[in-house]
Image (cartoon, rainbow, N blue to C red):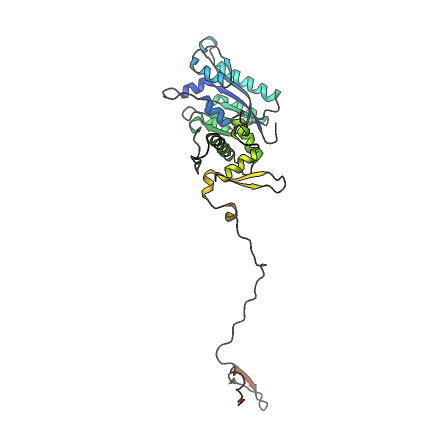
Length: 314
């Protein structure tokens, strides 16, 4: 794996998700789940567990997403929840046999998976939970390193400023994918947006992406064209001489990076000595009487600051 890229294994307790969708008009969309998870890293394993004879309408979309469907016998035959047991066994098997997998995603809201989450964390794995708001246990949610609600998927910020209508369709799609990937990196708290990092995120979201299909020779040319359209702001790293995206989308409405930076001090910071106050009023001059040793105070004559008298030069 490239430096800093996570390897994800996704395990879906589909029967628990089906309980959360009871009484709802919308259907479960696996594309929304995977679109959010690829922002976190590369998905290397995807498995879903259920009695698929009960959820035949969902098998088609799951197959299209390249998810392995694990058949679980009916609960009336086994007398226990075999899906939970099988999911835990497969997750622990990958945790011990595949060291390169560092992130496990448990798509469920069942509190029975809380011991699995704890054991994965003991083995140094990062655990992400994903489930429905109404059917998710607080115990599971609080035990995960991070938890994502299904209802929050797809809720993204507006990509303003909007792309001009005069931009060709090919370039418009490239700009939209570029801004979506930048938003994904912001959601992952990435502060420095390297051009290589942005392209890797685009490739995970859309593996078929190629800047040449959109009329650009290099990815840098795509970034430069987006900057000309006012969609983002670029800077160049001094060491690697590669592009870094400093602002994009709605961030462009604020001050520029140079304007937001604090002004440098021009003075050397030396403290000026306070000026001594000028004496006011009449000064007293102490005269010592040489005869009896007594001291008397006499008012001093005011100092004439008018200067020497003017001389008549005529």
